[in-house]
Image (tube, rainbow, N blue to C red; front, top):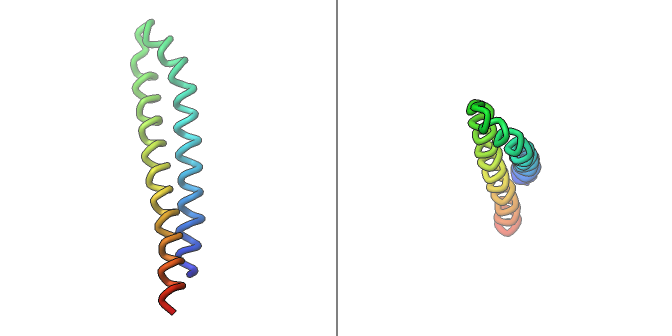
Length: 79
């Protein structure tokens, strides 16, 4: 039960950090698109990397949270 609660909380924290990074990169994309017109490709690539990494962390954190819920349900029904 303790591991399930830990997985749930840790997964939700990771998902929150991932969504925050994803949204930050989404707002930075507008500035990077303007910079790409003037030839600043490095900012655009960095924003794409943060955006995809944030989405990946959010999906991984959501999976951990769901795994924690499933673990709590399975261990409760076992006893």
